[in-house]
Image 1 (cartoon, rainbow, N blue to C red):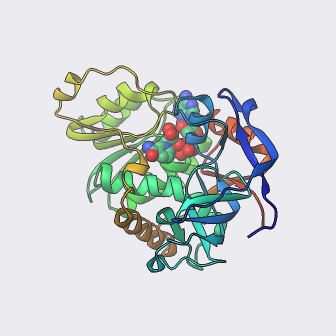
Image 2 (cartoon, rainbow, N blue to C red; image 1 turned 30 degrees about the vertical axis):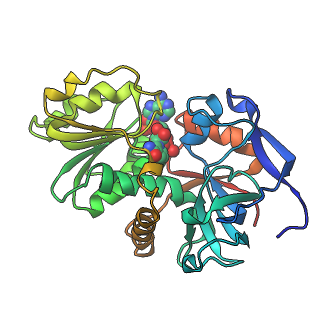
Image 3 (cartoon, rainbow, N blue to C red; image 1 turned 120 degrees about the vertical axis):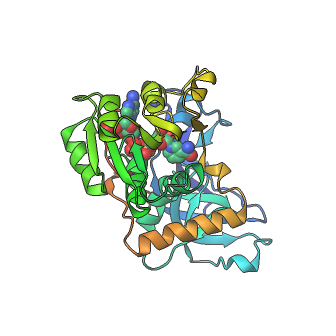
Length: 332
Ligand SMILES: NC(=O)c1ccc[n+]([C@@H]2O[C@H](COP(=O)([O-])OP(=O)(O)OC[C@H]3O[C@@H](n4cnc5c(N)ncnc54)[C@H](OP(=O)(O)O)[C@@H]3O)[C@@H](O)[C@H]2O)c1
C-alpha cells in the first residue's frame, strides 16, 4: 500500500448545496478491518444518492467522504477475507461502498466485484450502482416478462437508460418518458418502442392510447413526487408501480387505499436491500457482467469529470442537464 497516510478526497462537513463539498488533500487513508480490502480508486460514479447524502435527505455521519461507487485496484487485503473470494493485490475491482470520491476506499470484501478483462475499470465504476439497481428493479422489484408493456420514466437517464435496455432484453414493450426531443433520441437508442416528450404531450393520455386504455403492467419511476400521481394512474389493474427514487423530491403523502382501486402492487426498493446477502450480490453481479460481456447492455458514459468538479457534476445531474452516466476520474 501507499507509504503516505493521507489522501485527496471530496468531503463534506455539513449538509447543503454543492458548495459544501470540499476537495481536501489531508484526509486519512482508511484503515481496513479484517474483512475489508483497500482499493486505490481510478474512477468513481456520480449518483443521485450523493446529492441526497449531501443535502441531508439521506442522513449520514459527518464529516463524510462522498461517493457510493467506484473501481480501481486492490492494494491491501484484510486478514479474514475468505480465500474463496479470490481477492488479491493488483486485482481490478468495482465496489458499492461509501467514500469512493477519494484516492482510496475501504470496503467489505463481500461487496467487491472482480472485473473481467472485457469490462474496463471506467465501465466497472459506472455500472456498479445504476447497473445493479436497474437489474434488481427488472428482476426483483418487478420480474419483467415477455409481452408486458412497461413505462420507464427518465428513459434517457443513467438508470432509466439501462432499465430500458434490460426490459427490451427481457421481451417487453417499452414506453419511455423524457423532457426534450434530444433526450428522446437517446431513449430510442436504448430501445424504447415509444417515447413521450412530457413537456409536449400528456403522459397518461399517451399511455392509455398506446395500451388500449389498460395502462402498463409495470411503471418503473425514479422521479418521485412530481410524477407519482401519473405513475399510479399509468399502472394497469393488478400491475406494479416501482417507485425507486426521488429525483424531483420524495413522495411524502400517499393514501394506501388508492392501491385498492386497481389492486396495484407498490414497491419502494433500494439496491442495498436486494444484494445484502453474499449469494444475492454474487448472483446479480454475475448476471450483470454477463449482460455487459455479451453487449446486451451497454453503459452510455456521457461525461467524465475531474475530482475538483464533483459539485458541478452533481448540479448538472440534479439540473436535468445530463443523459447517461457521469463518472469522475480519480487517478490512472
Ligand atoms: N433505489 C435505489 O437503490 C436507487 C439506486 C440508484 C438510483 N436511484 C434513483 O434513480 C433515479 C435516477 O437516478 P440517475 O442517477 O439515473 O439519474 P438520471 O435519471 O440520469 O437523471 C435524473 C433524470 O430525471 C428526470 N427528472 C424529472 N424530473 C426531475 C427533477 N425535478 N429533477 C431532476 N431530474 C428530474 C430528468 O430527465 P428528463 O430531463 O428526461 O425529465 C433527469 O435527467 C434517482 O431518483 C435515484 O435516486 C435509486
